[in-house]
Image 1 (spheres, rainbow, N blue to C red):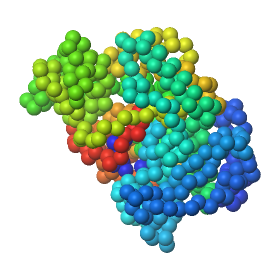
Image 2: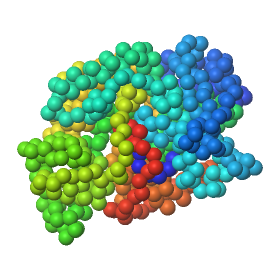
Image 3: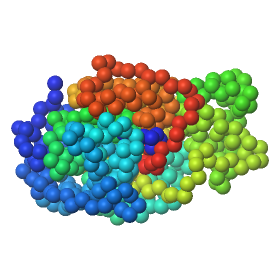
Image 4: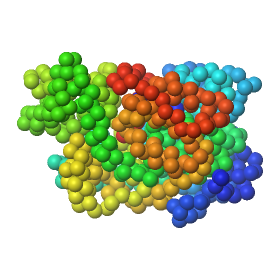
Length: 511
């Protein structure tokens, strides 16, 4: 996750109008929802919605004002009397209770990102007039962190999610191995770690806190979670801010494949920007010359791997490393200069600040990505798609279309959630976002028919809030007043402008 440096209504049952201790029956307007197994009734969820959280200090390394508690929720909402799991929640109470409007839930992204410390991040970023109105609420989504974590026992090289076509046969073996390990370690519980169930957990949390509605800030994957919540519980959604948006119709294979299509115009823009600064970067005075400089580095790495942070990279490794950088033109230029120098005999280092090595674990990520929607089951489908996409989108097509453990995953327990409602929401989006491109935010805007969208023209990077004063003003005003802009808004940014790094780690493939 980059800068967060934060984050007519559908019909529902009459139970939705009852006391806040009863969770709303889910709206069932979409075809996907109608074909889903029946959700639990409000009466069936009463043992969960009437819990009394015991608030304690979250940890010795966090401020005393941030309090944590643990809730119980059903693993399977179709059988609320069955197995239970834990959901860890956090709260930073408003310092101005007389101005309190309600609660502001948050999610930092992923899938697979822990969120207990999000209230601290929001406390640093939100203006006082907004913070006064909310208790800031964080939580680890089911399967993550302190919330009955999914632990498949995968490690090291197995945690590399997207892989090039040249190793396709090995990729198939890896995908099946990961799926088998997860099935062996987690069993049927794995199929219930989904966005839809996390949204249901959010509504139990709402009820436990005694709130009729929740406001919400979600970034990256958090926008998908927020959108699904508005679909299932439209009358429970208050002020919803979705930062750097996922397209629910592309969840999830389509969200990876869109990286291949959208990096091509980003690369073309990068070559123009860099060519205009040939005196600085020396990569060529025309876009064609700059492009050749990059592809020469790729060819050189295929002949003799280039060492980056002590790791040798072939041409595919170079393409994987640089894809994100092309959306942020200055980073792209600096990266390719480093790689060019390394190819000439040097050694390239990461552009990122030095941090302790942290090995990712894609267990929870895979549970959501594979459990939210069906994936093709035949590995040859992925081979054909990879070959075709590599030809169409040479920078990243083979990576984005490649085989994943979802090909060998158990069938999802529910169909994909179809988002189509008129719940008010504010979407904020950079034009040049590597993880959730502009095209996916525009798609969500169409699906959330009551939404307004703030687009940062020439905005770069993943995560908008606190990086652009114009976009911040729109988000802050909405959270403070509940009034959306009268129309969509366009803000401005300067290409190549430095952005401060986020204080939160990137929690998953979407950030």
